[in-house]
Image (cartoon, rainbow, N blue to C red):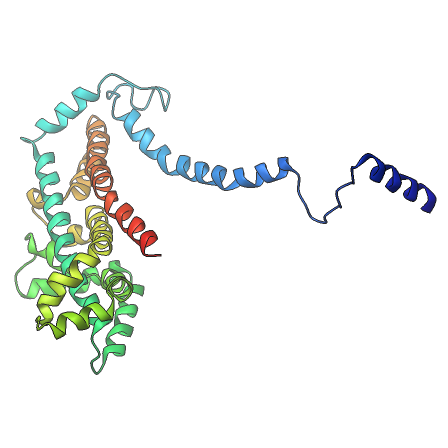
Length: 307
């Protein structure tokens, strides 16, 4: 055997070719390709799982009352325009009143929450004061507390000052977001250099002026994230308006569609209006995400440039 190996090595040397050494654990090109495709396949499965209900709503909104529960699940209909028209004329356009209420609650509430979170997060990140650690720990505890547990205490507090069944009863609890303040604090600590803040102080700028003119432009991508998270949370909020509001003209779209769904038990024709309303309620969220995603891209590019 040793002689055979010697002859083989000699032949390889004579022809100018040497056999490549064997490497333990080395995979072939086919195995490497499969390894690279696994994450893509997982992402596609996750996307399919998330988008399947949206596809069902889109298809179901195009069916009339007769075919909604009798036809194939993903067989489209031709009644989408009629369903939207009937929904728009229901009780003199009450659905669009719900949509405007939701835009008010989510837009104003998320904007105020982003402003409060930005100022609070910047203060916690750049100022040293007694009790700062205690405040931050309490803030972390607030992140861990589910918002649903605060709905009833908030109702009792607002009832004492006579603000229940008003727009303020939904707006005020949405302004302070512990998670938003936490994100703003982390982002301010990373995005706003201490040297820039000190330079602005040396130049004689006030503390609020430093925040407004120096820190705030640097924190815009982080605050956009806070705004989006809070906007979606308020848009999808159901329990707080359900507890606070009694007049259906102040309902958000989630609570309004819930009332229509309950009425569908006695009027099955309303089910198609509920599905059409669910489809329309998704559109503002999609438009908002598509219009604001450029801020994330700008932030990623600036981070890559700094690196």
